[in-house]
Image (cartoon, rainbow, N blue to C red; front, side, top):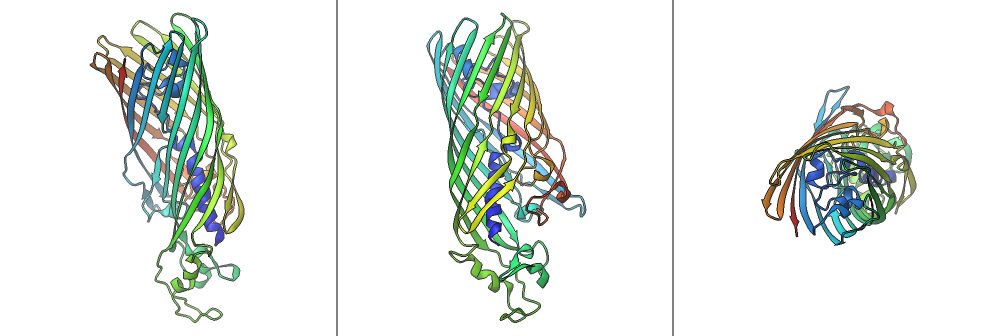
Length: 454
């Protein structure tokens, strides 16, 4: 029974770390409208702090950018044997971003960005089939990045920033009594006493937070009057969840023993038998847990082509070193350390974008991106139903005042259906053989940024 709580923190760790399935690259409406292709020619709105720190030197005025993106994820799981369908709750999440950039002279600029690259949530009904792995996984992060950029020559700019992250995680899951060992009888579960599978008897809520520190480097080379090359490197960092707390409450089953146990007569309510396990100091009582999670390093390189005075075309390649997320070691207050094998894989993505500038500050944009999945087959769960994706984007800019504009973007995520699981099958290290159905997922994103220039 002790490992049930350990599993809770493990799953929260997976949700926090998987930036491929639940990361967030749309950190400015202008760049989002281009499909995120911005490393060689960031938008003139301060979002270069995120897309390429070297791009701050392209800003000639002080810029203030305040924006947000509304995300509406939709999806469901279909059991391949029973055809039972569990659907995500229809919710909309808002992820903010803000930047301030100031040139100090024609060759030096500084800036700061506040954004949330991990800010999505996987929220299923408490009755969903995968509730015993987790029915809520919430990530709330704030990254603050002070940045400086330098124009070394007329053609070469470099930039760097210190990336400080605060991450808050929450996981909610149910525990199946049928899979729990009887007190004092290892290897014998309550199912042997007639408790049916999928009997909820405990609700586990895990919360925790931590800080991480990393760095962000970038460079832009103006190869010619019409072609720019860019690259950025986001260093890996580790977020230590040192203050994790586990709170478990009993869920009444209404069941009674069908057969007597030593010292316990038949007909005794099962809820009475398990109740002592929820007391302070017991295995299901309040307790702490800790772990350390890697946020992988990331490399993006791209090109921007000025096809005409009004048309710009862009292409980026993105590599994320997700092989770092191989195992997670959990230290729980009332259990020995546990190691979870995730075996994530490195991911690759392509971003394509274009924009057309009209007179009087109006511009239109379009983009496309596609990337591979980080999670192997055995790690596709309701918390992270990860799969290869294609994303289609569009955007527009309107002039509001002489020194202000409004950027809008729309993005549609078309994720491939993928087989996954809603149970661990009683295995410490599940294999693809445990996968019992398919996850279907898509999302609509609407972004807006107000940009002021001084």
